Image (cartoon, rainbow, N blue to C red; front, side, top):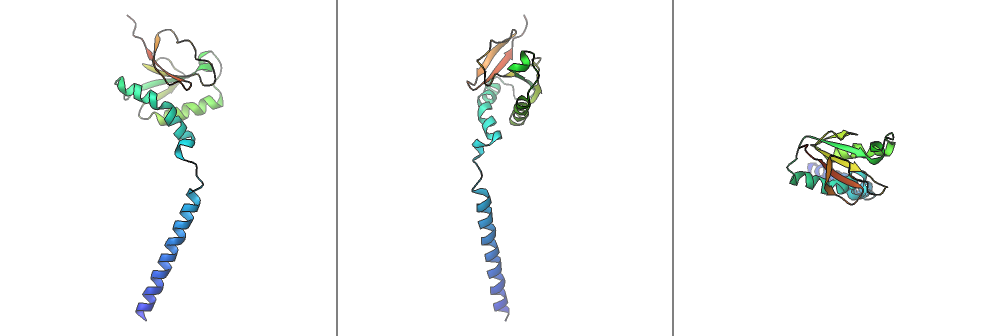
Length: 141
């Protein structure tokens, strides 16, 4: 009697495990790859900038995020605000400050426009060739 009960319980556990695995695969197989999701796209876009900051020895501190439209005097769009949030998330542990050039490095976002002239007082540290520039503030002499 006890052996039969153990066999039934084991069978129920095996069936439950198989059902759980089937539902897991059913739910995850339709998900897009990480590289196709917003965070993955921004990780790829910013990987060169992150590498340039590491090579420059700048692993923590403030960096700026400046969309070209804001630099030209327009208000920040909703999409630019979303881009700033994604940049902040991807660039952790750096503190990405919105719409400022008063930091040692600035991510200059000119997505969707022609590459702009470099603002006075800055040099290009890295050109990602995907609408993002990493600018380094030139020390006044």
